[in-house]
Amino acid sequence: MALKFDNTEIAFKSKSSHDLKRAKLLFNMVSNSSMVRIGRWLTDVAFSIQLPIKGIIKSTIFKQFCGGENIKECEKTITTLNKYGVGTILDYSVEGKEREDDLDSTVLEIIATIEKADSSMAIPFSVFKPTGIAQFSILENANEGLNKLTEKELKAYNNVTERFDAICKAAYELDVPLFIDAEDSWIQNTIDRLCEKMMFKYNTEKVIIYTTIQCYRWDRLDYLKGLHKKAKENNFKIGVKLVRGAYMEKERERATEMGYKDPIHITKEATDNDYDLALEYCVENLEDISICAGTHNEDSSQFLANLMLKNGVEKNGSTNIFCSIVGNERSYKFQFIE
Image 1 (spheres, rainbow, N blue to C red):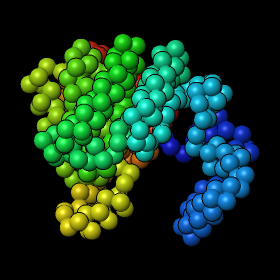
Image 2 (image 1 turned 120 degrees about the horizontal axis):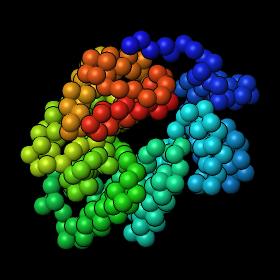
Image 3 (image 1 turned 30 degrees about the vertical axis):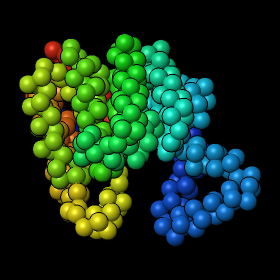
């Protein structure tokens, strides 16, 4: 099954010439590291002295990467993308809050995105970031086990568990697939524990809850296999979003500063290899695993298409794979999302 990635008419048919020119200019600017550093400094200064630059940011960088500040603002983008067969992810990406009422408010916003997904065929799934509903310090202190927590911290952790459950319950009741983002390695054990708890509770009949595995970490392929073993022993199914990873510089800097082994693969080739091995493992175990292949990598997309052909997985939709969901239904239908 050969995929073609060079048809720009298909790739950019939802964009106007003006959109493409703006995007090209913007990407040329952000590819210049000096300009990024200066731009960040100027932005911080502008905000500190209350210059009215919000409109400039919203019409340039924000417009390129975000559909809107709320669900209503995203409606036009959702409709436009759906016209061209492209699904939308509503990601309420607020994080770094500390007050319990702020964290609870974020839960309500995330549930609103799930309800929106339920009401629209243009939104195939929902997603949330754990640091949006938990204090970072609680996730970090619980990373090596709950016995490390004080009584006050344990109460806060239990609140985090309740927030996870409220979101996952909403997704389960509305039958909306839900992806839980991965984060820094020093809080990921806590997130894994919570994701596994939610999958055990809600993925008994079909996959609703998806955890995220960052394949630039050298230990995550083994984690995937161990999670699969745990799922088979405890009679639940697992959902896995496979990505390469997003925090490499930060991870390496912290490992060097604190004197522990770098959790990231030494080479990109090793990351690519683990990503494709994870794809292969999941496709060969579709009776227990559903996957989202989160990648823009052409080689991995071609590899996945070949795996589908080899394993008799049916396909639906476009062959332009950017994000792909494999369901664990009996027919193993494969849904492509551009």
